[in-house]
Length: 195
Image 1 (cartoon, helix red, strand yellow):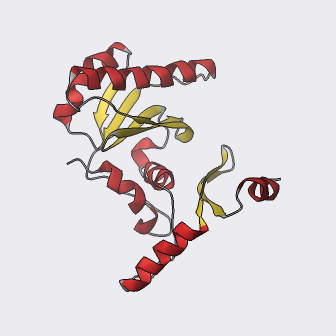
Image 2 (tube, one colour):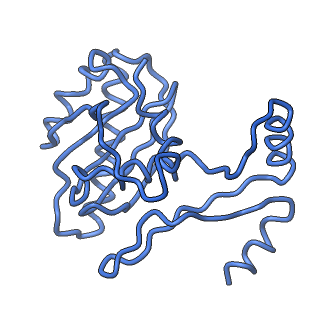
Image 3 (spheres, helix red, strand yellow):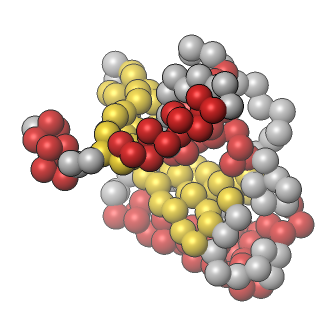
């Protein structure tokens, strides 16, 4: 079935997936992505020009999920993780230590302003509403964020606390436990850097 979908919708693209989590009880979590063949060829050619051998290309979501999966502190959490990048935020909902849902939103307000705080709280509220419809037994208890300074994020805190959630900046000294080496988590670490 998957091959048929790829044939129907991806004429000039290459699609692949990576295993994020494999557990006998929870099952397998995959992260799939795709790109046009020509774009991939351009990446390979640029790499050749500068003497860099490209063995793999991944999508940012896979990197973020690999980072979350490799941090013991998050293993059994039911929480929302916010990764800020320039004018967008990727929100990942983890349920009992496993990927459950994600969304990427454009941010229209300047960081640190009241409007920024309102946008972020609305986004979190939407995820909470979605989660409530799944009738999951484990409540969301925490928000973790990265890629946004504590000063800029401060305008979000009252609204998030009013939703009954604890707030934690993601630590910058995380110990990663990654099978296959640290390179599998590097794509996600960039989103955790705060300017």
